[in-house]
Image (cartoon, rainbow, N blue to C red; front, top):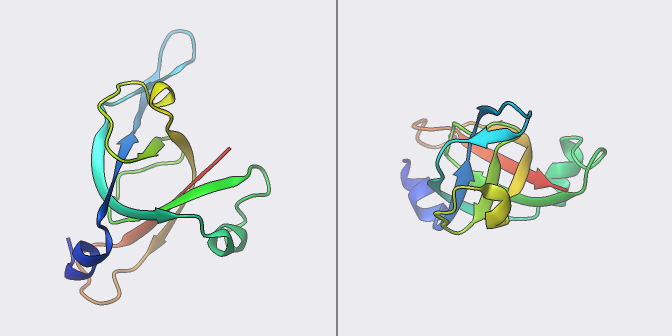
Length: 115
């Protein structure tokens, strides 16, 4: 983790990555993972990325976590709940990648959720 990220990403979030689908076509998930992040709603980023045309932007999570994909679920704070829906998590609808401008150790990501 870069020194800037250590200073910036002081909040925790839980992410559930999609593992696949069961025999009924329902998503299955890997166990929850905790990530360092910061969060909020940045409607300017959502609009410039074309987000919000098919759904309403809910939250943006800024993080160095590189393994997230569209369709994964994320929640502000830590949760050990195995089902992201029961935990109240939101689906990641869009991901934007940014370069690590200062130290070039790890890129940054904006994970945008929506309904």
